[in-house]
Length: 161
View 1: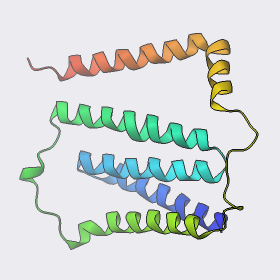
View 2 (view 1 turned 120 degrees about the vertical axis):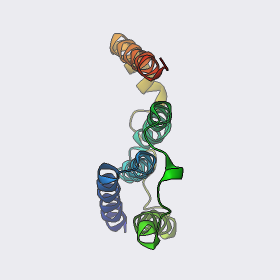
View 3 (view 1 turned 180 degrees about the vertical axis):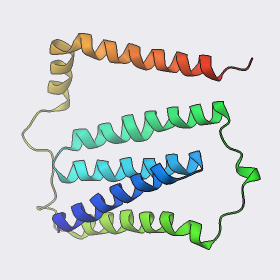
View 4 (view 1 turned 90 degrees about the horizontal axis):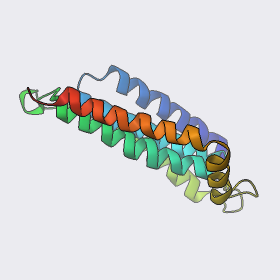
């Protein structure tokens, strides 16, 4: 059962990513990319990595997508009101991806609870935090500064003359 869900989600992630890359409208591409991130989070959960799944949702589907959307809105890349209204064929990718996510969650919910992956005896959140900041504290701070510089740079590039 989990293997079937895994393959469905893998196809969903690949399909959503392809739609995100080939989409002409930037906001639609972000929605497809967020769908891909949520599907990837469920895959991480299926692989008994709930912490990676939570990080995928919080960091990528949350923070990075908001940053992308902020930059697109700030740079004023598209005007949806000037575009044509979506036709019936434009709804098929979103409908397909939504049904695939729903089917995956339904299959997970209907499976027996003893077969669902849970938190194993591996590293917990506290152990991960201690390891990250004890062994890799400088690297974590450098990455946080890089994200801050990227935000300041995007504000500088997007300001009005």
